[in-house]
Amino acid sequence: MLDSTSTILELLRSGDATAREVTEQTLRAIGAIQPTINAYTHVAYEAALNAADAVDQDRKAGRPLPPLAGLPVAIKDVLCTSDMPTTCSSNMLRNFTPPYDATVVAKLKRAGAIVVGKTNMDEFAMGASTETSAMGLTRNPWDEQRTPGGSSGGAAAAVAAGTVPLSIGTDTGGSIRQPAAFCGITGLKPTYGRCSRLGLVAFASSLDQAGPMGWSVDDVAIGLQAMAGYDPADSTSVDHEVPDYQAAIAGRDMKGVRIGVLRDSIDQDGVAPAIRTAVAEAEKVFTDLGAEIVEVSLQHSPYWVPTYYVIAPCEASSNLSRFDGAHYGYRHAAASTEDSIAPMLAKTQPLEAMYRASRANGFGSEVKRRIMVGTYALSEGYYDAYYNQALKVRRLISRDYETAFEDVDVLLGPVTPSPAFGLGENIDDPIAMYLCDLFTVGANLAGVPAISLPAGLDDDGLPVAIQLQAPVMQEARLLAAGAGFQSATTYHRMRPNDFVAS
Ligand code: GLN
Image (cartoon, rainbow, N blue to C red; front, side):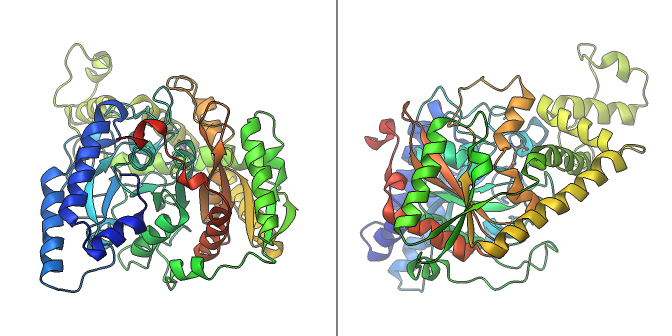
């Protein structure tokens, strides 16, 4: 099923397809791609069909239906679901089914969406390739020897391989936008606070945000409409009116819109020629639509990655302390003599030995690396040098954005330095993996909304993308600009060859 969200909704509304038919088709598509792509950690065969039947019965009885009635969606496995496991792709939570739905999941369900499954990710959303998953890696539907990106790699691949028209990812430092870019789809990271974080298993609480992923701006606008809004149960969600995003798209006018091009990013060494070309062509597209191009520099952008890689691990080390085998997570009952940490455990009290063994065996190595870095940076004597310093730089980074948005309406630049890299290429080199986030973490540090849009193919036939960013709570403006770009281009209609036939 490679159709867009609105096409499927139209089929359902007109009665040309029943929710059961659409769901069955989705489940068949998942079954066909799972053995190779491994986009899902859990498929809700029975629950999805039951939900579909309920929609069909309501439709038959003429009862009023919510806007997304019968639409299949996939949810990243970091968002709590009361009727399915929520593993964060970690052995730590392999058997965990939460007692409640994340607010964004509950809202999608209330809007009539059918949750067909949970998607694979880097363990606890730490990574840029979905290779740190304890549930096996996910492959890129455009080239199975390459990664789909991460950490929402399963969510991106689930759309690109034609299983669902809409998936929900999360983005702490680029995890919606980078996989969207690698998989040739559209991905939106909303403003921090636009969507509730209740039930989003926290990685870095001041940066995490859930958002929609689909083929086009129209798909993600439909997704955002259902997800966005204030949640009294999440004090970081913002009580700000949710506009009609599709109306904003329909009423768009690019004439006189000022687009700030992030020239410094594009000119950096190591940015692939195809990415440079994509941004240059996008400038032309926007100019032809009547927009005005302005050169913009975000002065502190060289500090984005170092600042992010202090703040995110610090928050992670605190958030992940709850997974100790007692409060939450996998419990390693007794250390066996085969455990590599057995000699150390022999010297500790039984309770502490249980904590240590549970954490040592439950977490993968990237998660442990982040916990250690964060614990170190927060420790007495280093707190001011690292964490406090990073918070000050974060303030400067936010100010750069505020200043830039005094002159321009949206920012244009790349999402990633390169198209999808090969499986195994960066997994043993954490710094190389962190540098994938070069252009994405700024939006998280400043809290602004940002979108990744398909913008062509490189010489190897791999998708390349552009990124637009807008001021806080200006998703409507961002979506309108993205829709403007997609009205003049066809890149969002490209599909991976292997999946067109199926
Ligand atoms: N790649 C980044 C990291 O590893 C971003 C992850 C994310 O956005 N969840 O931290």
